[in-house]
Amino acid sequence: MTDSLASAALAARENAHAPYSHFRVGAALEDASGRVHSGCNIENATYGLTLCAERVAMFKAISEGARKFRRIAIAADTEALTPPCGACRQILWEFCGDIELILVNLQGATEKFQLANQKGPHFADPLEGWGEALMAKNQSHLALAKFAEAEKYAPNWGRLHLKWGEALVYAGKPAKAKAQFARAAQLDLTAADKAELARLATRG
Ligand SMILES: [Zn+2]
Image (cartoon, rainbow, N blue to C red; front, top):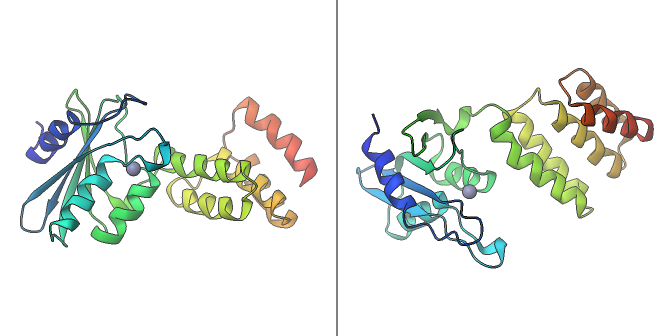
């Protein structure tokens, strides 16, 4: 059974403006007085100005004077339920603390989490990707912070430790890099990641 907050998120998704990605998301945020603030993702031709559904709902609520929140529902058309990205989790954490998240898809599958208790690579993945993007821009010190944050969600993710080690090599910290490579070697890695590890470890 879909609860009313999840229904509100599904309805908000219908208003998504996603002409570039075609990935439509809806969110519904319930404040302490029971009022529901909805949001959808709104894309922009310059991708950086795009706003996620969760942040649209959050900012609408704040602009209307709401300050305390109970739960947020997030709706997307994916079989594996779509969690909030790192930027949205940061915003939610600041305004809501350890709020209840209700993820839902169009088939009515639903899962509940507390914001503080998210585990697993699908929560760490956006952070790890962000770290890799920072490394590609030669910002390995910023990348290190993203990898450290991702580790909170997926401490035993081999690839994360591999890329973390790589960032440490670039940041000029070979001893710490070696420790990350050793960690990665003990965890599950794809064949491609194993080859990359062998290549990087000789450099570290
Ligand atoms: Zn987001």
